Image (tube, rainbow, N blue to C red; front, top):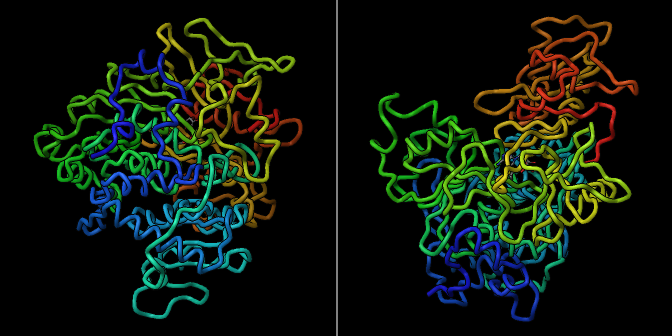
Length: 602
Ligand code: WT7
């Protein structure tokens, strides 16, 4: 039997908030036998000790549609083999292991093996091109990469020579032929490794995870999280996703991003529930089939996916999914990553028989901070309320739409409906503990005991939060953050490009798509052929997830006095708004009021 402490019975919102505190919640963790905390231990080992090692941890569906189940005991075996492989390869404590993998059992063995071994795990997105992959591995000093043969050939081989720190590349699907030089077969190494492993002595402050995220300027930021974060992963999976014993949970997030880690892997495993892992791509019939056949009870997905399902209701408009598929097991649906439009909430009610609850958080927060509780009726368009243990506030802003800090102090905008920067009181366990090699940027995220999120929100009289927009130039496309600077830099590598300015153009399905404005060097002439060449050039380097969808030639890009391209103005023009109309810029979801001249605080 599961210990009751692992799967708490859900109280209602007000009593949960009134009684919760993180110190007491810590008793929910098993903790290492010698003291200390390790994420992998909470996800796997504790269940073996509690006698549920034979419970199904994962149901992995291959691309072809066959399902393999892995129990917690089998996952312990696999991740132990991976941990022992790291020892055999002389990967030191604190060194980093990168993954460039889709959703597959090897991903789980790698992530959990790395964490149990006290090494640092950094996931990458498989839709990145060679350049974003190289940049992140370089910044994160990757020692080991685990990937597939095809991804290696396409994305890593072209840049391998520029990654001197990358000592080992482990291929999950070596096949029969010879492996590329400088790579090894993961199955072979794991078969040779012992299946017993004693979890490394780690504690709450020890580094566990690195997640790259994008800002307005400069390199991607490596947000660091430590082993203590697991308490927040577990508690929030229980409170915001309503996970409990017996659940079958499906998180559709890609494992290359923080949601795929905190809730695709860690949260549900720590609660001992069964996770469905689908290796297939998005396809409406496939997704409804997974929901029905696996009898998914709790589903965590994203607005873009919901909007894509809305547009492609199987069997035509007259047929609802519930008539074609048995969705009777489903009891809770939640969304994350971008504004959840009220139409998507209502579509859920009709098509799935359940409203969609929103959740808000960031790579930096490590876990859900604001959510619509399962027990509460959904308020369409609102993100919900702060979770137990989370204190949020709306801070008064200046013209730059960032919280005003006067003599080290911020001011809380108390009036219901007041617009300001969302801030979180420092002190929850999964708060990031730094940006890799960038102390200044980290410190700029805090003031007066608050973490400043960079999101603009309002709060209504009942304490529900409503998303207004981001205060920076970062683009949210299909739920993924894209740094305009990274796209501009890649375009400027092309000999024809003098300068580039990149914005998010509002899109009904993806929220925004990447659009680039480009000015050419004197010897080049704008034309359809060059436009196509630039699109292909950017796509090859950046990959489909980051590359611009559209390029427009613009001989005179608007600039600030200091010479920086003013994305804000480009966006205003794109939306047909007067450049000075800052309030209306905000409503596009990704739009910004920020003066192009202010320095990037984040
Ligand atoms: C940014 C963080 C959430 C983890 C995965 C993405 C936007 C997130 C919502 C929501 C409106 C949202 C914010 C936030 N965002 N959730 N429910 N409604 N916007 O993490 O890539 O670090 O992105 O995503 O702008 O700051 P991320």
